[in-house]
Amino acid sequence: TQKDAATNSKSVYQLPDGQTVNISSERYLAPEVLFNPTLIGSEELGVADTLVRSVTQSDIDLRPTLYTQIVLAGGSTCTHGFGDRLLAEIRARAPTHTRIRISAPEERIHSAWAGGSILASLATFKNMWVTRAEYEEYGDSLVHRGAL
Image 1 (cartoon, rainbow, N blue to C red):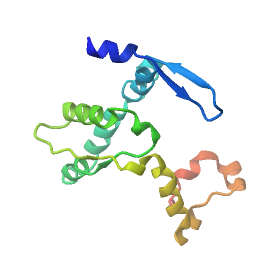
Image 2 (cartoon, one colour):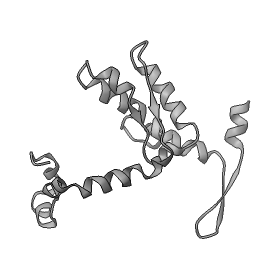
Image 3 (cartoon, rainbow, N blue to C red):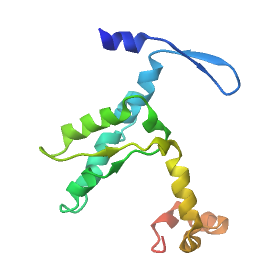
């Protein structure tokens, strides 16, 4: 089949150090873990399940808006077909006739860095900093404090 041919096709990639690697099915199996984490023994939800669960746990009046304002961010979302796959999986899980819109900005590979940079530049962000001493004393429970 066409899918089998695509899965079995080999691609050659050049790494930054000049070495080349041949990949075939890994090209499709690695991103599949994002949708089906059980492939690597994880009990976590996949990306589509996590998204739909987050939306359904929000206020019922906000849900239609949230489904129309999904924005892809990060390098993993640049995988070929990621947006189409996510859309199909959300459609399968969302209520019938739900309008779903997914934005995939060209610069999304840098979105997390850009967002962090903007956050760090805000004057109010300094109040959210955790010092090494605080972390050593309280550990990761600091993220649950009211100041954040």
